[in-house]
Length: 287
Image (cartoon, rainbow, N blue to C red; front, side):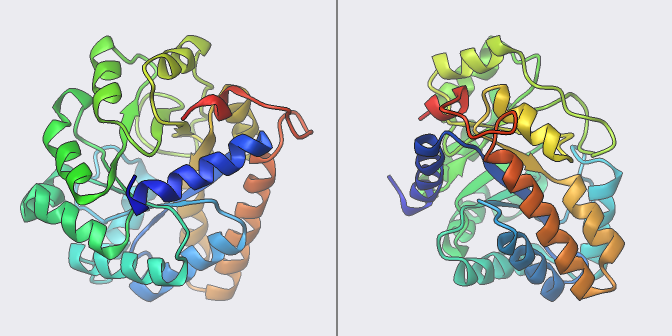
């Protein structure tokens, strides 16, 4: 097991033993500026975030809704580049050595550098996983192979209407965690997530999938509790985090305070099920 995979395994093992779940916020690298985005990560970690998912800004983020699209545009306007993103990831790794760092990006940015070169550079920077948002599972093989060769965990997305081909691809290539969509569509906190059907979670377990984290539409502690109760190992919140940065980006102190408070509230929800610590849940039976 690589060092990168170990960070996820340690996190999930810890919560499996406690009968709890993880909270993973998403933020856009370079938003509102490169230096300020490092402070965003620090604030989220101060609030108890268990891992971080970071986005590399891209001009055509087709999987993202308007909130994250605007964040990408702000980062690009501030001069953020893919090389700069790698440098920020390296800085995050230095500041937070044990924190699992996942990267969400788009195929164009990966292919532009060459898939293997991109993955090797990402691993060298200290990232743990790679999710290429616009590549379907049935076409993920070259990206997943390069990621695994570099020591990264390939993250696959499972939609509510996942096909047998999706599950087969997940069984073959998925590592780290499984990104389960809380609903169809693009990212955004204005459309609530829906807990996945029990048979979807059961199918993930059946094929030996990595632990499921539910994303898309996660914006409140109640959404986190619902995700854990549905059998997820945790929840990912993106647009809700990015919206805080958008509202407070001109005031670093208030931005940091709001992010820390938000993360702390979501972490408390991830640690509890129906208001009490659970004896165990479907989330913690995945390996």
